[in-house]
Image 1 (cartoon, rainbow, N blue to C red):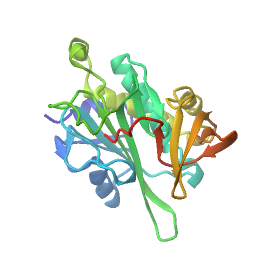
Image 2 (spheres, rainbow, N blue to C red; image 1 turned 90 degrees about the vertical axis):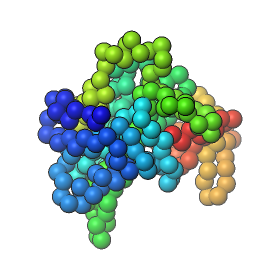
Image 3 (cartoon, rainbow, N blue to C red; image 1 turned 45 degrees about the vertical axis):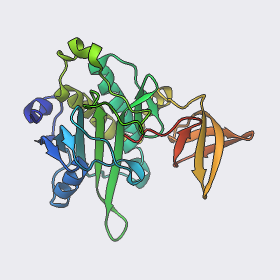
Length: 263
C-alpha cells in the first residue's frame, strides 16, 4: 500500500506529494518531473525502489520496510549556499527520525544518519546544470530504513540497520511513515528557506558521529589515516594527520577498521 499523500501534505505548506508503492528510483522520477517544469516542493514517495542509488554510483538497498522520497528544489541561491542543502537535510532527517522513534541520531559526515553506531538513513542530492553552468534544479533524495528487510540485511552491509526492531513494534503502532516524511519536510524547508544563515550548522557539528574517531580517506589516488577533530562552520571535516590540521571538503571517508555501509 502506498503512502497517504494528503497526510504528508498536512505537515508542510506549498508541497505536492506524488505517492507510489514501487518505483525504480524516487530521484529518477523526481528528475523527470523537474525536467517537465514540476514546481519546487514536488515530492515523490515510495515504499520500495528497484534501482535505488547512493553516492559515488553505489546501489542503495531499497526493500519494503523502508521509506524513500525525493524533493524537487529550484534554489535561487548562490552556488556556495546550495552546497549546504545536503547538510541541512541531514539535520532534518536526524530530527525526523528522533521525533518518531525517540532514539538518538548522529550524522556521519556528510550525509548518513546513524543510530547506535549503525547506518539507518542515507541522503543523496543531485543537480542538473544548464550549458552556462547555472543550476536548473536540484533533487534531494532520502532513504530511511524503518524495519529490517525480510531476510535481514546482507552480510556485505555490516553497518546497515533499521530504526525499529521487533521489540519496538508496540511503539511503532503509534507512528506513521507519513509523519516521518512530514517531520523531515517541516524541518528541512525551515532551513532551506534561510540557507545562507546556516541555522543548522551547530546542530550538525554536535551530532557528528566521526568526531574523536580514526578514519581513512582517499585523495589523489592515495589513502591516508587521520583522527577527526570535528566539523567547521563550512561543514568541512577537520582532521589531524601526522600532526597537521587539515580541512576536508569532500571525499570518501571510512572509519578505521570498519567497512563502509552502502545501504
